Image 1 (cartoon, rainbow, N blue to C red):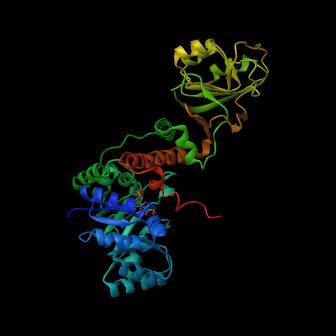
Image 2: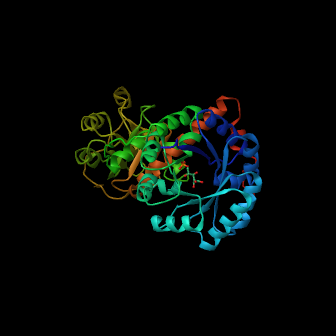
Length: 429
Ligand SMILES: O=C([C@H](O)CO)[C@H](O)[C@H](O)COP(=O)(O)O
């Protein structure tokens, strides 16, 4: 088997950062360098020109995702120095044919991106006949966030397609290795190299993995377990970022400081310090759940205290969120149990039994339904609608990874404003 090609996809918005990351990725073993679609949209063909100049010995790929005017766009990229130019596989045949003619004229190659193609096997045969040089079994970044897999797409094509197959979409060392074992000759990796603080190390790990491909047996993980694992690995701010600044509850503080709670909500609505339903809810909740209690936002009477916390901890409950007040704060702090409340107050109410368990409530400005996911840490509490929990958890992890590289660049001496190119990206209207 020929040595597989490692292509690093530079899906950044800033050319200087992209060049620096490309240098580090090449040191780690990347063969081909891709000007990613976001980079091309941000910097234009200058991105391709600069990469050509800085990496004269490497193949430069321009991920144009061409949908129309095939010849013109191939000409632009070819004249800027690209060796391989990407077109959408579901572009009309007229576009593909023109792109291929133009590629032949300028001595470059065409890679067709199967993103969103209904019947990838049939389309790959057609593309090969039209003269395309490579097929890319690509699952796009937004599609990855709802669980689509590039490996599954690749496996449908393996053995069916006569031209070399590339694969792209959320690959890491493990899946890249499996991709080569499944028949890919070009492995395209974006975020898992470019977002790493140590880009060279990340590229090296993938290089080693694809040079010794193997298929490892996978342990099946339930979707709930994946969501929990991902949310436990990110912060509440990462989660609100992933939700476009939605989901944050207002005015809550962490009673025990640096603690974290992740789990599905068991909701409680209770009135003016009535602590019967909150305490009954401990028995309704299971291990790993978070009790979310609406106490009308009252801060003059507490429906929760130390004994309830003790009982919740015994039951394995992950945390308590109260739109209201809490008491016995000193004892709760000794337990280091994740309790988030609006205020502290010494007096309890009465266990009258008014209220409901597991109905939709509003807590600190956010609607919470039973089963919604809660992520709470020292920055505050965020609610994630249960039907979007997998996607939000994946996106929050991407937010965290992106910050890892930014933190590294700040550590090296750039200001945050420089890294984010704030002046360039200020909103114009
Ligand atoms: O093509 C890509 C995507 O559509 C954004 O332009 C990515 O380069 C490709 O998905 C590889 O990146 P990762 O999925 O982050 O590995």
